[in-house]
Image (tube, rainbow, N blue to C red):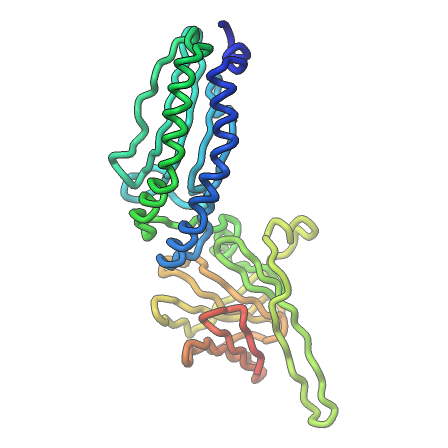
Length: 315
């Protein structure tokens, strides 16, 4: 046997690939309901999906199959200064005379589950019927036990150690004093909730009622695809305050009819901001019964439900 293509045609490789393609989706399905329950019980709000990958080249002549938690949107552990991982890994590195193979559950949260040494298997054994049967039996047993072991490791994760990565452009623009100049909610992680705003004039009372409701979800990238000038300068006015570890700042947009309010961290990282094109500058804000009340300088009041900030009423 000689070369990568010969190895991929071998009994060992073809049976391993077929087994993992058949079993990994089943393992994921067995894990998912309990996994969702754990996240709910731990009150974990940010995305943390389980993904599986089949037969992909990690680098060079290395092929891998994985079932793992996707930590790509999280900063590395401050404790270990290493990336977070919880991965069921099957890895094969093809050499000239041997393959280096391993299957393992490994976790950055458990010192006993750090990546282990590979097993060296001579290429001549990859078509040995008895050898291949024993290896497939061991891998099948590993997969059968995987859901229970995977969930046990999830239970032990310190979710407070997971720092969700904020959207770099939104944070950069905020530091420079800019927000998207639309009626919308801007989340520091990147989500944008567009607002549907309109007003109704009552001819009997001679008064106009303003309305705000969530319209759709989008992203900065999607908005900039059609308009590269979505940003407007904002000015913070005096009167920032802290409520339950949230610091609220507010003020005006570049135009006289615009206003905004934002929740930020002590070091000025944007948690979220809401921009209004109709409020005029927000000159005052306060919290009443878990509702954030913003006052525009024309007499308008905006009621934001802090339990669900997309619930906004205009008074």
